[in-house]
Amino acid sequence: MATSEISGSPRKLALVIGISNYENGRNLPNAINDAEEISFELERIGFILHEGAPKLNPTCKEMHHALVDFVHSIKRGDMVLFYYAGHGIQWKDNNYLIPSDNYKEEIKDNIVKKVKLSGSDLKIYAINAQEVHNNIHDRHPFVTMLFLDCCRTYDLPDQQLQQSGRGEPIKHQEGLTPMSVKAGSLIVFACAPGTVANDGKEGEKNGLFTKHLLKYIKTPNDDIRMILSDVTNGVIQESKSKQIPHVTSILTHRNICLYNRISEQIQTKKNTFQQFGITVAGRNGKGQKLNQLYNPEGIFIDNDKSIYVADSWNDRIVKWKLNSNTGQIIAGENGSRNQDNQLNGPRDIIFDKENNSFIISDREKKRVIRYFGKNQTNQQSIISDDWYKRIIRYFDQSQTNQQIIISNINCYGLTIDKNGSIYVSDCENHEVRRWKQGDTKGELVAGGNGKGNHLNQLYQPTYIFIDKDYSLYISDCWNHRVMKWKKDAKEGIIVAGGNGKGNSLKQLSYPRGVIVDHLGQIYVADSGNHRVMRWCEGDEEGEIVVGGNGWGNRSNQLNSPYGLSFDDEGNLYVADHENNRIQKYEKLRN
Image (cartoon, rainbow, N blue to C red):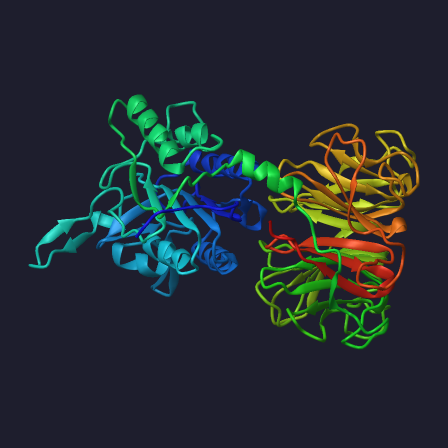
């Protein structure tokens, strides 16, 4: 097959998994560090990280679900990278990635016991690396790359023996066995087949292979084959030839650059959207029918492009599937808003897949409720219910139940970080607080110094966003600005607006929704100016992304935009509040 040159820059997707803590066997302290630092560097060079963060210490079920969702998100022509750090082992000519729950349950004497996995259990209780490669390849990406830093010592019970073709016992081998690589693919082992990788020197936080991969992976405009040559040489020299990375590839393109600096800088400048929106939910005027919305606010888009809407004045959360003409009520269908299990003016909705649940802010009742929903998908959302001043987590189970988890909170916006901590904007106390899992009292992280326009103050904060570095972006609505509070900061910095209320490119008017893309660009729903703006930190003025043509209901107009969200292809969705619809603006392909 002839090689070819890449034209333009493909979309770059990555799934990163790191496992340090195991139920059985030796833990690997550096594996999580490896996964987190690889994730950080990949995002810096333009990769879209699956679900925005690495999967750390997942169970077998969680690994399987992550892989299925990730593979489903891959489009033809994508550049795809899978990285795994943890235990891995070969068994009967297959390589298996070992999950954190590396045991099976057996009943002995009417007692359920956790039993360490044997070789014959791996097909069920571990992940087959060859199947990962095959499933990704079947989505027809531009290139498939697997990085397996998992050649650590891992013993099966009693040194489980395999049988040769003649019935002779063969002790299972250490490390990994060579894999079948498909055209357009590259597979990298941290060390040669049948050998064991170095976990790193004492006091170092990375394994030897990943240490050198981190050093070279961000090299701009360098072909992946050249990068791996540098990585290999570095590992060999430091280990004094005791560890030799193993690369198998059948690449069909030249110049496969993980970081094509020139191309991606140009692409960033041309990151534009179709100016005529497509109505994907609502479109039938305000009302309470299933084909209508009434002042929608927060929105979330899942991997299937289903849209979850906080249908505020209808006191409900509605899910609109792709290309559907009607929505499905998933919360708030229990009659009177005064009942304990009812919503009243939900304001925001975010996604919490780890806990498989919804969280709702029930504002008028000033409480946070964990709610067990019914007949939902494996995805989950978090909902801010403005009127009852409460937050409710809707669980994805076939039951209805609820539990108060936070009391006395005047909630508007919500966001959640990669550790599962929930952040809540309190627009009456002009502050944002964080609740870590298990907390009974939220920790103040922004504002809390009374209403005002000083850098340590907020004035009616609404929507919020947390990035991978735990920096918090806040729509400081009545100060007509967006603030960024870095982790543990005592005051914020202005990253958008801050020049008084107005409609110039230096100003905002009652900003609402705020989201930040993987390049650090800040998107703001400039509600009072009926437009969506984009700002880069440090710029004196922003640029209009969509809208800005006066208020109205034409396809190139908005009327008080509120919630913002991206789908997995980078298309922009806007909750067009006063037009009672959700607008989709397709990203223009360069």
